[in-house]
Image (cartoon, rainbow, N blue to C red; front, side, top):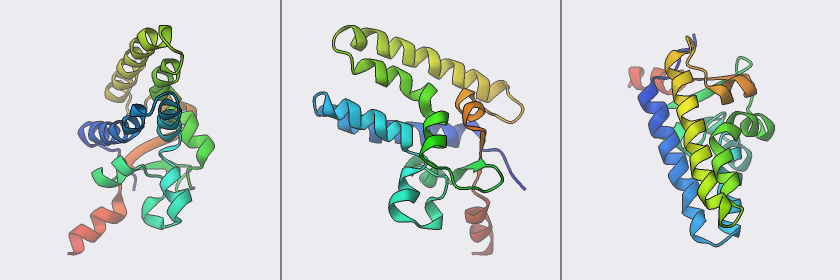
Length: 152
């Protein structure tokens, strides 16, 4: 049974992942590129690095908030799917790589996409944002962890 994730854990997971991504920005130019790459691939990267089931279809923020991505009924989210679903939330950061003009336009574009994504999460019956539609994914509560907590 797939339980869609509540808005608050999704928000906190996104905030945690954004903070991790923005840590790299302190390094001029290269940091912005590393930040964008992390934000694009965050949902596949931990599993690709550690190859442990606990990281399947999760970013660090999602792991902390006990949520995960449902992709084709349990298939592993790869780098392509992660990028598809995270482009809307990363496009502002991509634009900021352009010196001066990008530093002004990027945050505005990022804010517009963030608002669109939030409205879609709140109004869609499956809480699917634009990125979920592009990646053919849904964010759900992590039932495995919930079942373990109930048994404890």
